[in-house]
Image 1 (tube, rainbow, N blue to C red):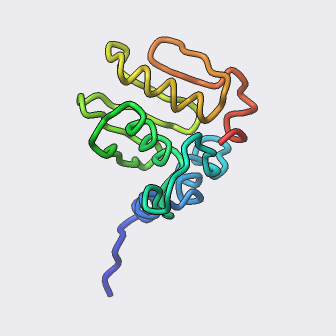
Image 2: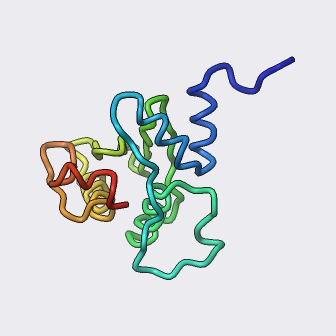
Length: 145
């Protein structure tokens, strides 16, 4: 008998890439309490073709930001074994969504701007410290999305 995954983390990563919020929450919960992300209320009307049913909320918001900013490519992303969503921008810079923070390269203005926009969509009231954007209220980290 052959198994498609050789570890629990690989199994969870696969399901998170397929849009399973619970799998992402389990990956993120290894060190801290994490709840599944809720769908994002967007300002734009989207057709079903624009928003696949099996997409993580953070990925959906990143796609919307790409459209609003006129970036013609689709956002590339991966998910590591800790549940961090790693977005790769066209410039080659990365934004890391840990569920509680957004990390970006300090010298990349586009990455800083997009990370700030993602954080505002998630938490509303955010703070920027160096190369990290977080919620001003730690209690709202998992309740806003």
